[in-house]
Amino acid sequence: QVQVVESGGGLVQAGGSLRLSCGASGRVFRINAVGWYRQAPGKQRELVARITTDGSTDYADSVKGRFTISRDNAKNTVYLQIDSLKLEDTAVYYCNADIQSSPHIGQWNYWGQGTQVTVSS
View 1 (tube, rainbow, N blue to C red):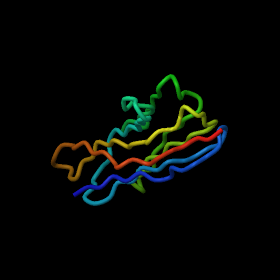
View 2: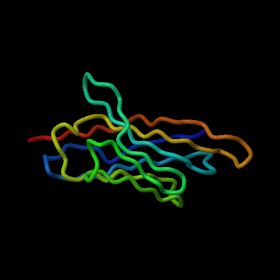
View 3: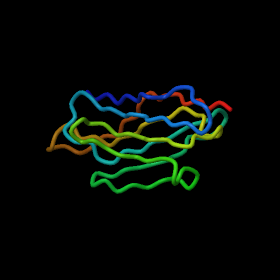
């Protein structure tokens, strides 16, 4: 079994920073592409950042220059550094990961349970 768990959310003032973590545990051979999504109340879930196996990154226009996604393969962890937080960044942030449990089988897609980020004025 594989578990994906996000952490690092919290309440922060506008202009502040947070670093979210997405960790995978269990039968993890390799973590391939990982995406960070967010869902604000009453809105659809949206992709905000993505990182591929080789470290290539992509960001939603709304977060470019403020969000940075990175990965530490040795720790099976992907991070999302969020700077210059805005009120509109308030949302539940979810991690979505393509994970192989063995070199001999294909990858499966996993979601974490989410971590709440609340930005106050």
